[in-house]
Image (cartoon, rainbow, N blue to C red; front, side):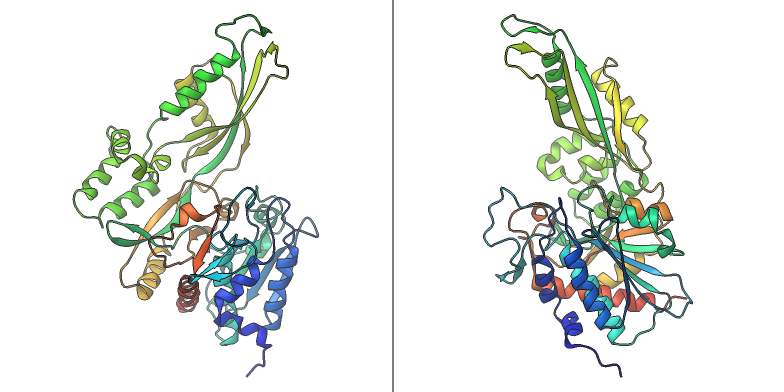
Length: 445
């Protein structure tokens, strides 16, 4: 039997592993993730796991580790990001990089997004090695930087510069999904199968300029107000995409009357917006999944108090539904705002065009084994993750970072917020669930 350093057995205490990860301040920007990557690398090397680092910058390295299988199945990938968003101007009950356990939870930036999930993956990965299990296919663990920006130093770099590392991989798990969603007095577990695409745009709004003392009608400022008012009060057209249809059908079929009937009407394009209006704040989950969306986020115009600007630049964060392209969004904006506005696409990275559901039932059954009340459902993310990069290699990512959460811990409201935390119990649940998944996959030839 192989003798391992006692450090390796931290896999038995995933909450402790998470505390250690939180204590590395990997706020992006600037990131500086390498110190935390070296810590993980040291753990894996002490378990005699093959591990390497790759990166564009010394201070922004990505980790790649592999446990060899017997070759009877394709490799399986687990990946996630080690960088976190800022805590600036947030009022925390505990220091955000202390990793303190309080009220049964590990508190700190990244506890949910996504150092907690990484700790689960690392723990399951180490356990497979220590218990000398030989999977059917190789198991790959990839920990990347820079997800909270655009992935240029992280997943995008790994996919574009080192695609050979992921040869023959068909399936992967990453963020976001597998956590408890409490609805209708039931425990749903959304597993992300697809996500929207990021599409940034800008337009230049023009009008007559002049001296600030002279009234000007229909100037650039007035036109800006019209654009913002239309975006604030009107939605873009409804679209029912296949993965969103799967999600709403699965959710509604497990809900009681009348909620099930109401949700079903979201799939009726003539009723979708009326139902969303009826749901109010309860429809926040569905609204962005039924429309392409834009939010005005940057305004630039004017540089002197007594000069009326003749040009204002307005920039938008646009999000496209799966299968839609930037031209579709521009056409919808022209129909809403008028054709006088010319839109320039400043950033677009397409996501996957299709969904492979072949592993979904396996993920669902593992969750149900650990929570008899679990109701797994397919889920479409309104944000973007590194899945968009790995999809370029033909890899289907499932958002699967299992967490059993009490109702007072709302995943979507706590990530990126003050007092981000995860129950110790959820860490143990996730580590066990991922470990069981890896064991179960090893049975597939």
